[in-house]
Amino acid sequence: MSGVLDGRTALVTGGASGIGRAIAAAFTAAGARVVVLDRDPDAARAAASDLGASGSVAADVSDEEAVRAAVAAAEEQLGRTDVLVNAAGLLTQAPLVEMSLAQWQQTIDVDLTGVFLLCRHVVPGMVARGDGRVINIASQLAIKGGESLTHYSAAKAGVLGLTKALALEVARSGVLVNAIAPGPVETPLVAGISEDWKRAKRAELPLGRFGRPEEVAPTAVLLASSPGGDLYVGQTLGPNSGDVMP
Ligand SMILES: NC(=O)c1ccc[n+]([C@@H]2O[C@H](COP(=O)([O-])OP(=O)(O)OC[C@H]3O[C@@H](n4cnc5c(N)ncnc54)[C@H](O)[C@@H]3O)[C@@H](O)[C@H]2O)c1
Image 1 (cartoon, rainbow, N blue to C red):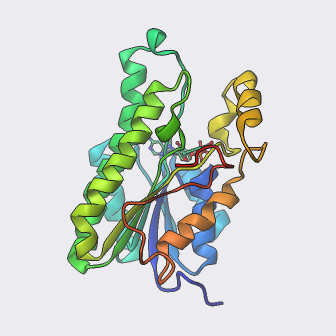
Image 2 (spheres, protein in one colour; image 1 turned 135 degrees about the vertical axis):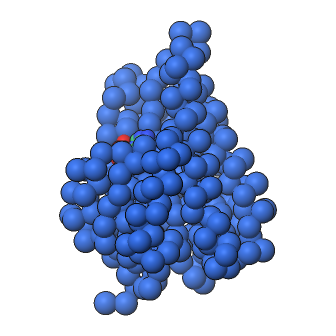
């Protein structure tokens, strides 16, 4: 079966669950060879097997040595990385006045520095080949903020800044860097958020409901594909149930 990503290779972080998993599935269905990266090796392996992906690697995205080794292992399986999707992320909640430095730092390390580290170890190969796509999963909270989410909102706003700055650095080398800022999506990430918060959030949304991971994944396929994604440089696409209209 032919697809818009035939012949392309992709590394998807956070590919064992939620949005990353849906993107890995959509890329595989579109013809790409995909390696799933996640923190837990068993979960990454199981997801790769369920999705018919080419393989899996395990790393904590905030650990540079682990990232370096995982990228090398993934590229041994794939030959090269044409598309990097940074979807690994975590979310905790606390008002700033109660937030410890450790809680702040953990979110910045995983949700922002993790994106830097994956880009740092994958993008040089893309630049050398004159071809590549990077898709960073941010959040609409980067734009509008969220109560008890200063750390998460700051990390995701950082991802948008990183996306634009890196897009400027590498577009002329044939590497296109963009972000997706989803609204609330039903995944294990939001399962732990308080019911009150979720009820209030649903009421705010013009669509009146959270999204599903498979409703976000086609935006990543578009950005990864050619000619569909060819003109997107440093953009933030917003499958967000109408939560933000920038
Ligand atoms: N669900 C939402 O409402 C929503 C909205 C906007 C943005 N996002 C973003 O989408 C991305 C995916 O989130 P999701 O909702 O699918 O969550 P999820 O919890 O279902 O998936 C996140 C994945 O990232 C992995 N992960 C977490 N920390 C890691 C680390 N240090 N190293 C490697 N892997 C790690 C987890 O193991 C998990 O498989 C995240 O960046 C999240 O911030 C989610």
